[in-house]
Image 1 (cartoon, rainbow, N blue to C red):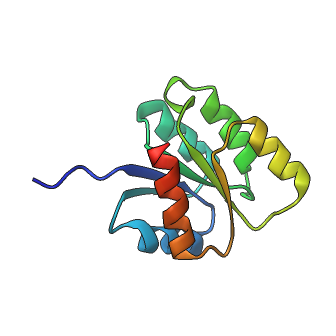
Image 2 (image 1 turned 30 degrees about the horizontal axis):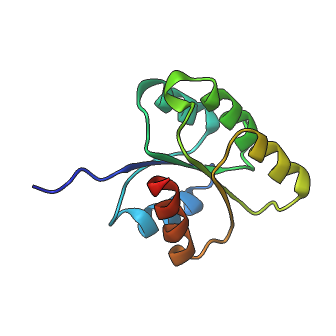
Length: 124
């Protein structure tokens, strides 16, 4: 019997980014792509993903706001979160660190690098 794949919630308002993430990870993980912070929060209210990949720059609700809401949810309190972003300014790094993120991946990401960081985060 095939072991259940670990579930990764991928949150990005760019369909191109989501497609790239899914393409990269679908062999090893079950990827749940959502294209907004609100959808991510709705998902975490119902299910606890094994890991969240979260884009910072999104239209309606950015990644930091989204993460703040997810951390306030029962199922989202202790999920490892990796921020995916093209932003590298210090304020963003500090802000996300306060919210207990596991890692920070700069876009465009390298597949191999993303895999390594996800493995590390999931092995905790």
